[in-house]
Image (cartoon, rainbow, N blue to C red; front, side):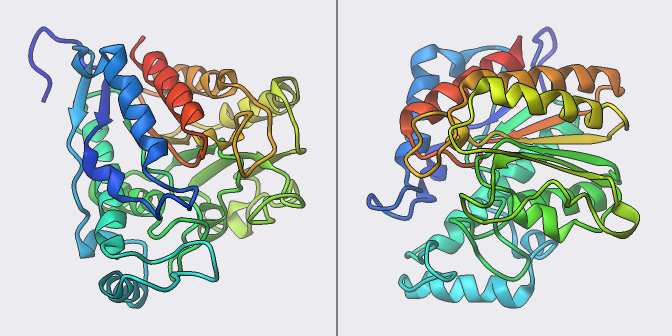
Length: 321
């Protein structure tokens, strides 16, 4: 818990253990993207800021991962991790020695971020390595081995009794794992900004997809055309704000992927960090109006190390103001 007399605002997962989620130097999902953020954080002096509690990464247990993932799939990842070679999906998520432990660290660290806000140690928390939104219950996809967001949702509901959750995703890639595994869940509201699926993996997330059955109207896809700028983003933001304001929530999760920023090597959007800061500002306001509904930020994608350092550092600064 925070010490008396100190105003602790943000719980930040921080530790070199997270650099182990690394598919190698020739793969865009490598440790350089997180290393650059840690270096920027250290240079800024924020690691010693009294408004921040540093959260040590930890591995999730098998039982925690199984809250969301199929046990057969978990065992498959364990096996491939021991083998240390091959593919976990159909092409872009390779196995490496220790991949099971690395992926478990991401999940466990996101759950530590959840615990920090639910205990009211802090108002906000952040796991920069979290936000692996493509993994499905029974398979890996798009550099994502375990879906820490799905595990977070299940843990929040079973341990803390949370029902109504808002999930906002600003990664350039559509968060298909979260969207479709919760497509019929009326208590999970989703706002997903992303590059149009006609031009970018995973090829999903169209405006007509608004949720199924009782969940109709709880999902909002906001695709952006390639080369979209902050001005194009503004056209979508008002629709998102209206959607997010129509309900009250018990927990909010923001996947702050930096691959929507100009200069990313595998996407085409041209946003600036201002897009992320605009969402953070709105969610902070929404949090204060919802009986201090806690907010968790997850780093998500981003494959230009300069961009991840800039965007995530600016988010940290915005959260502690």
